[in-house]
Every structure is written in structure tokens, then in C-alpha cells.
Image (cartoon, rainbow, N blue to C red):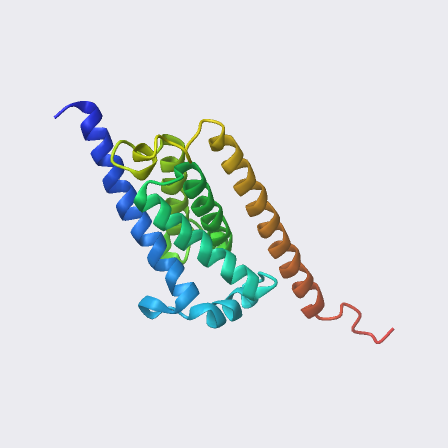
Length: 183
């Protein structure tokens, strides 16, 4: 087996595994599959985590995971798929970051790894055993890589920043009054 065949088989295996995990998580959010909360329950959870508005945040997160996961598994539009999934995982990692790195303590290890893997596939391309290859890379042009990652990074930065501001505002409103003398 040649090195290029091994590489393309490795990319296929990586895409299928990563895509399946992302798709499963996304369909939990969107449809309540696999024990998930569905869109309404996820919207409530997103609101509680500081993502406003909750329903739109849940929909965006579910679509990034489901859409990005399906496209990664198929090997179609790899730059956009990898960037979308990585952007969604950046938001998830921001939620878990206060708990440190390791998943066993609630840290960002798992969403960070999924995002990193999705981004890596988006950068590397889907390989020979993909729909991108079968369609002569119509949705995987060289210029799409920087565009997809720039758009995803900008969107993730806006979402994470808005969440941080919402949480800070809540903390400010819920803080006890410093003036205990009544003046």
C-alpha cells in the first residue's frame, strides 16, 4: 500500500469518526435524538450558559455540529465543514474553559479536540475517498480555506464575546450592594 493510499484511508477514517461524533451531538441539540434535549431544551440551556438569544444560539450550534459533521463525513466542502465545526466547538470550549483543560473536571479538552480535528481536516482536505475529490473539488478551492476559517473565527469571536458580556452583566446585576450603611 502506497503512502498516498494510506494517507487517504487515514483521512477517510478520521472524517467518518469525527463527522459521526459531531453529527450525533448536533442532532441531540436540533431533534432530541440520542437522549438530547432538542431545540427547545437546548435553547433553555444556551440561555442559562449566557448565549443570547437562546433559540438562535441553539440552532446555530446544532447546525454547525450537524452540518459540519455530515459534510466532514462525506468529504464535501471540507474547508467550510471544518471551519464551521471548529467555530461551533470554540463556543463549547469557552463554556468549559473555566473548569480547566481535562474533561474529567468539566474542562474544554473534548470540544477543543473535536474542533482541532475538524479544523485540521478542513485545512488538509478530505482526501481521495471523498465527494470533494469526486466532484473535482468544486467546493474545495484553495481560496476557500482562508475565507472559511476567517468567517468562522470572526463569528466565534463575536458569539464568545457577546456571551462574556452577558455573563458579566448578570454578575454585575446580581452582586450585593457594597454600601451596607444605607447611604
